[in-house]
Length: 59
Image (cartoon, rainbow, N blue to C red; front, top):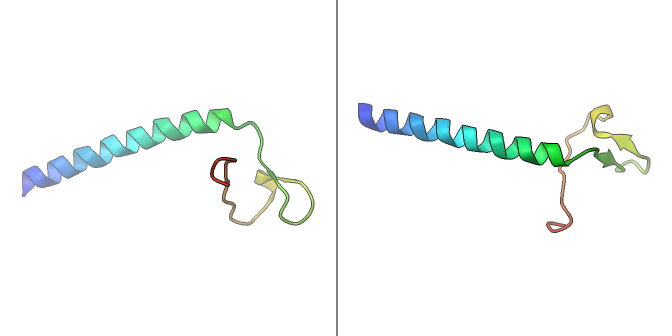
């Protein structure tokens, strides 16, 4: 049982590092996000609602 917990812990740590490095490279590509949900342009930092960003390929 102890080996299973140790292996699970290692997998979780590895997955978190992979996600952290992947997200940081994606975040560096995006310069600015403009939200136009209320028919006026706003910065993503200025709104208080949840936002889901879609790429052109996903849209």
